[in-house]
Length: 292
Picture (tube, one colour):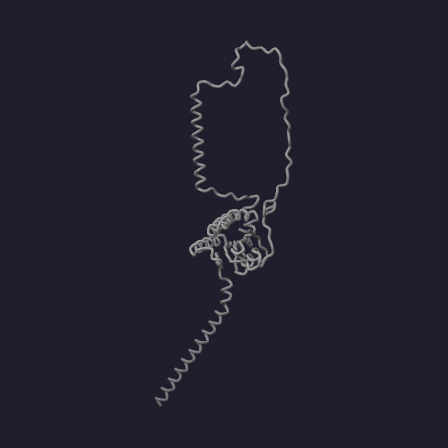
């Protein structure tokens, strides 16, 4: 009787163990299935790289430093600032390729995908700035012309690290100005800050000018003889009499009125400022293209 009870207890224990194993296996299977279903969504919302040097134009240290800088600027102003290099645009125009790259790789903040991307195609010797969302109004046609004028010389010289660093500096300056309430445009022009060397030179020139003015004043006080500018100062009173006087016509004054003309639109923009846009995979994008 006791042996039967022992066997029955052992059988019940083994059955319980099997049930626990089946329950645990089923739980693991369900968990794996949930993760598998969630994985595509997680990949879709993964933050893209701020520097995608697919053409290998930067060293690892240059890429890491630039990426850190752009990530910091993008996060501070909630507007992506990205740099991409590719070997070629695969037969597409650089504008279309950049817009597709921006859209397909999930760049941009918020529902309107706010951001700006500089893409350089080394094989085509072409580049494009793509602006999207709020960045279209922050980086106007005028603004992109200013940025382009300071970046393209680096690209032409092959100094891609320097060009991308300059792009980061200007993008930060434009974002900061827009955050203060007024974006740079034709009616609010960008003025490049003076370097430390220029400021020092101006200070020296001002000092020299002040010193020269002081010395000139001291020298004038030492003069005892002064120049007489009028002839009567050298005539003895009562020794000169006018016996004949004539009026002579020497010259005439002509007044001219300037005719105001409509100013010529700035290159790449239009008189009213703002940004021209075009259809893109994300809806509407602004931008500027060029070669180097």
